[in-house]
Image (cartoon, rainbow, N blue to C red; front, top):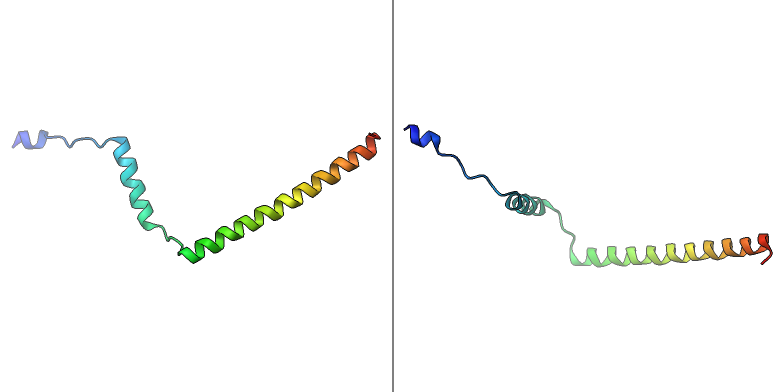
Length: 72
């Protein structure tokens, strides 16, 4: 009986634990449907283009203002 109490459980490897916990968390995720994913992707791309154009305009105006101030 004393020998059974002395048996120690094998320690779980940190990498094994990481992957086990990660797969457990990924099972809980509410994944979007394909139409929803396409719609959200197109929305992100549209916002990127709009923000890019806005920043390009601000950059152009700042450069022109700087040229006007410095007289270049």
